[in-house]
Image (cartoon, rainbow, N blue to C red; front, side, top):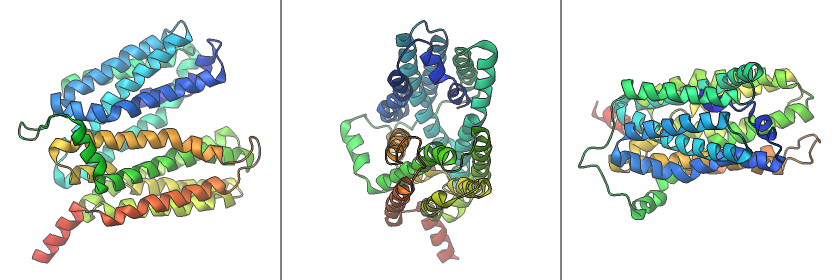
Length: 381
């Protein structure tokens, strides 16, 4: 994840160095996410069938080669193909690795292990941009892609030497079919959990990474440096509660924390457009960071309710929903924010709050196996 975010400060400028239009820059950015959306589900299903370590290695190898190709690109077309392949490798690795963690983690501590996994994502994305900017300043715009490839190569070695293969037992393996995939789409519990996943990405990408920067610039006249510090504080708060929330969900159940987090995020989002100063925005974004952390390990709930043979496909669906939220939320909210260069109105924040509350409600109607076991244990006592 540090490799992914290393290239974020330089990608537009690097693309423009090939003499292309801004529209083609946007295509370059979206191509990575689109590749992931298309391959998350197949990656999860096939990895469970042939072995997760193989798929993790395949994904990281593709990222390594394509990132070096991007850093050495001689034209836009070569860079675009490399970015698509980076998305392919990312889908193969990310979906497979979260499924592997879900299977490796003991049932009683699944929440804390998956929270730690997600926390490492946040650590990587937090440090990557600073590293990418430094590398670009000293070695050129293509160098961050070479650094991305190096990160993937190191990760490949870690998987080879430190991670054992993970796969379902022979009795758990199911043939891959559209019927199996259709069954996953029909399950109300998976639908509810995945809607909540979209809600988290709506907050991360749509609010924190899109609307807040626009609001800070046009409503508060805030500089990028100040906003960067505030967003970093929010990310630190997120990290501070995530592992703790994971442990608490292992004890008390997933539902109270995820549902509470979604609804509270909706309420906090309403207060953003009424903030009038730096201190107010700082405190509010820190509260949002803490609240996102309380959502804990959403993937642990999926593991709780899925049979082992369905886990790969379910995790692929989970990753797909997250990537869809990643792509759609910024575009949807920015399109209703008002005129370019004008102060941001309240509409995008009201819409985000409404969506968060509505997609949180289905969580109330689904099973929470951890809470059920706790209740059963208490009754026996």
